[in-house]
Image (cartoon, rainbow, N blue to C red; front, side, top):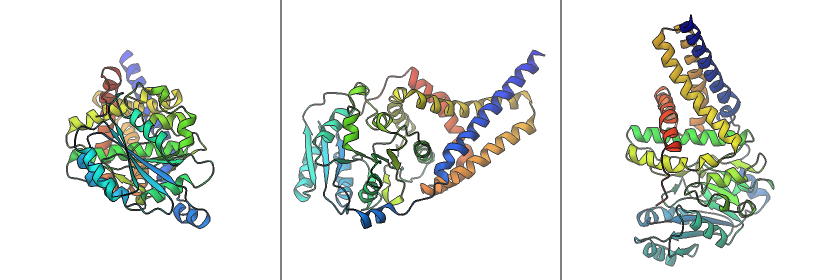
Length: 381
């Protein structure tokens, strides 16, 4: 009798977790999957108003090779207003100063700030110096190892930030470059999944994070929330904690036009990828309580969906009901991801969803709790 009651309780918990997953898919993620594009903002703004001046800011520490490789592509941006590329050299000990001097001699748009000593872990101090020293009131962030999709990246992000008077923050997308191997496939999926989450929540009026590889905002927002003063002791969070503190339902927009993508290369080993995610997770514990609650419920419901499904299958519970629940959710995922992956130009991942979804549950159930509870944060550079 007790065994039957226990299995019945597990069954109800499984269906509750599955229904919560379906609720998120249709009420939140579908907003991004079926997001109907407005008129081309770039063309619209060019017709009506002049684009605002912009400061593109990059913090670099020991990035000599990446700067030589990627900085020319950023300096080649075609933008119909004044702009600058402000490079903050965060006390590099490699050839970064030499390469920056060479590039600066050829490109008057490039301005360099040299930090002689690293005072704090992470890059918040360097980034704060760059934002404070920027010439213009509109800021666009990226990283030294990032490559814009083309010469109109700045134009598209600027148009999104300038689309109306209320917009103060624009969340861009920074995908991983396609390469061979399972790790690259997983990294691309996890990056797309993260973008789906923060773009969907922004469209639902609950923006909670963005990525510093492609993030635009007005300088006044940074000043209004006190910069990084409230979380300066946390090595990570120079991007998501800024958005979490400043973003509202009305002042935040997204820009996922392929011309506004900024590409990075994925890590080449699983250990490197896990260390990177370990650093990123260090800031999530200081999100607003409501955001923490929603994200925790989303990840836990995914973990429980698969964990309880396995337990119930092993117990010989009603296989038909389990199959219907699993297939219904998987069909929903396929529909939602089909729209998301098409928008984010990674449709080749769609066939791998059953496997990648299980890996995501394992990541949420094993790696995330370990890094949040037992592991010390990894600092930037």
